[in-house]
Image (cartoon, rainbow, N blue to C red):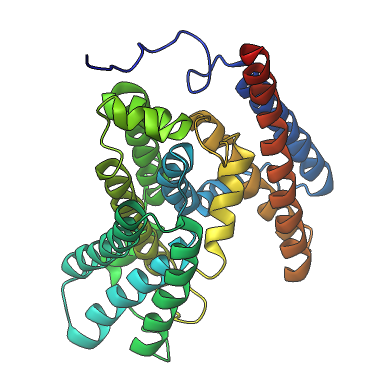
Length: 336
């Protein structure tokens, strides 16, 4: 007798109508509105067109990488090496342009392929060896950063006008990286809600063994998503390098993995898997973007911003724990 996955539910985790998801998303929206109101009072520059554009631009790369990270976390996995993959991809792109006179579009493609290779490297060890994704990606965080610094001590710089347009160009009044981030967001949302594989992401996050017995590709799908987050990291490194017109090996992408994880958890994605929405991820990214921008306008020093980011991560972990309690309660009541 074959076993099949249950049909999608009209409510519950992943549908956007689960009470836990609604509560977490509402709390984040209220927090975001309070944050916006606070910074608007503190600085007259906050609500200017230029500053709103700055918030969107600074949030773009974070959203690009947060979307596939959210898919991984919903499935019960995580990639903590994305910051180093961003740095490696950006530096290789810069080296090809500056040192080898490679056309910018070929160098950009090479950077994205490097990111994909990093992701697949992680995905192979996590999906096929059953090693902990936290341990594996912490190891590759150091590995990729070491390779980056081995390749170049000083940053390659001066990538040309065409490359600069990718990071600093504007189309219809909106920065090009924002258009790219919105396209990635739309693609991630379609994958999660509009394809069978998206439903399998939730299923694996809830119960991997039951998903396997139901015929779900519990090894190939994680490998695919690790490749996707690698591609996003490669794209992120490219966008950062294009915006800065430089790719510093020692700082590009450093601590970026913490920003991504904070945005994902703030957005209501359960770290244990099986719960979360793309809208929540977008709100989490905007929350961090507004927070960093507002503190910059208030001349808060770097260490103050680091403290705020750390507190945001702790708050995100707290929200994640609160979100788990109703699920555990429902499970206990079902068993009784």
